[in-house]
Image (tube, rainbow over all chains, first blue to last red; front, side, top):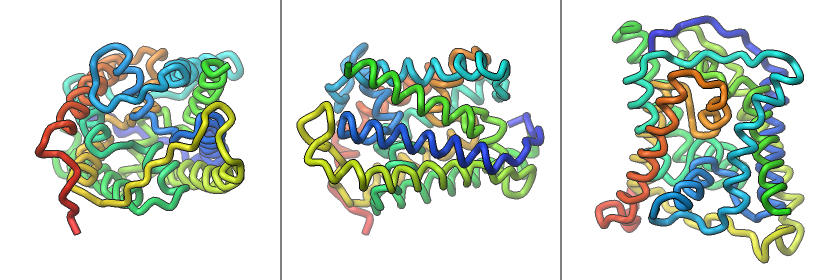
Length: 152
Length: 146
């Protein structure tokens, strides 16, 4: 998309933040015995609002998990006063992106967390195929948008 | 108890997303931009998260059951089928356009950027449509690619 700003390479905070994401996945497995897949957790939320085929039934922890996700930036703001954050402002592009992410993770049964973190940690062949595919599609999409269409 | 521990798990996940930089679409898009302003940070997020989950899962699975349920409920399918690959390709394309995957979109929502406020409802529509499409016959998981 239009935004092509430089970001700083942050190996240590990224590794530490990744560790927290992994810890949360372990908590969800140890407490609820489930994969911490955010697309699946979101389907639990959808199933509470609309009839959604295949929506999981253990909704209690899924709804509060989403609240926890949304509480995190407030905790960081309180602690450090700032959250580095820059979202593309092309709204039709963001609508398309959201639709594709929703459709794709529903059809493909998972996203970066379910297939990426949890699936790879379980050494799932299916998840490895999904991760390879969505990474390749992500690299290809950014290449086309930024270097072929040239930030149009 | 269950809702409180669900909240705590989500909070830890969200803190990880913010601290790692994954909740910032600019960083995600730069990770995906190998030919341009490449920022390799997200490889470290994936490494930290996957290694922690790999070790932690093995500790947790030594118990007979999770603390708050009667059994572990882990996907058993190993089939690489059309919906998996087609879905992952669509997801990756959307990820490359917007720089958001589902977790970061929720975490960034209260920061109220216009792009996030459009992305998240569109994602919910897509998830719902995808769940319906998946229950249709054409996507029934029967034909493996290999």
